Image (cartoon, rainbow, N blue to C red; front, top):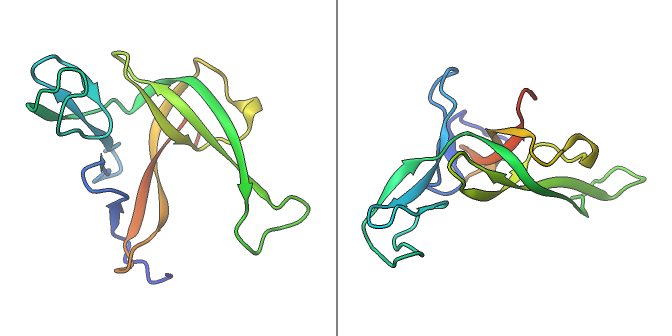
Length: 147
């Protein structure tokens, strides 16, 4: 760690399209069944609805609404700062336009700042570094307008 190349790579290949420029927002990659129209995240090889095998990759919306959320508390990695050795992190169900609801990490972890139905938008954050020093990126949703 610490030898960052500045290159960003997805946490899982084929899961997301990372932004390629400051004006590009990037997106998550899903699947759509050409037979029944069902959509999925993450990518599927077989439709869970009709068991069809003719699925295409689709770009999922990078905006949605907070459908439900929870704030979880897990032990902090050492060295944690007293008095609280637990780190909060937000998890939420995000409803995308068209009705798909997906489970995601949230950038916000204060339950007082989260509200069911609030507008959310996709962002990408560094999760860690791979063996080649690339920044491994993950998807999260943040309240719209938040930095």
